[in-house]
Length: 259
Image (spheres, rainbow, N blue to C red):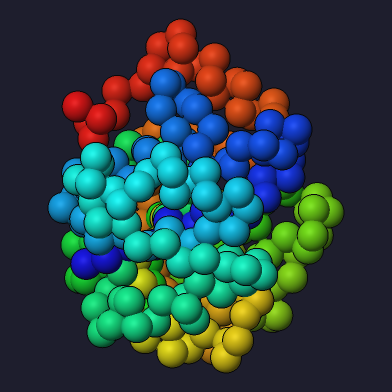
């Protein structure tokens, strides 16, 4: 199995830090932020990893090289023009071939058991499985709503950054069904079948959620949620980054894949 770590964005809410240093290699706990998803992949035995790059791409490639120092084989997927969160799938369709793959954000740190996630995905036979978590501010993030079996029945995607204003997929849902669903937040990791690439829009730019997965949910395509109850940290803005750095300096969380 191969993986893709999304790494091409500008990190605008971290400026001015990201004016000169791309977000994936900002330091957290004495190592580049992107090392956390990469080390987690390596611990699960996934060694072939694609990384899409755009903003200050040369710095990312200089720091990570070919991945050998991390026990990986890294393939870079340059984006001369940003392709959106889903666009890399179009460029990497041949790279993944007919095998399922893992997709991760570069800015998220979890104590996730990737092997268990992959087993969960395979057992359910869906097109994709998203790592989800409960809690959080329900009006600040998009919501992914699942039933008792883990099947995702509705996505409520935040419209821009307007709190509590959502576009729903499907647009309508029977009240008795909606009442049984539990809301979750996406944690930046998913497992996908190779067919996802063929179902994506024909050309970038396009987004993973709004342009690809949410319409699939509306059509009834089987997608599942894997609920993660352990450590979850992500870097959204400068305040969050500073808080995370302080946490790792004071009491680094025990992450088995760093041993």
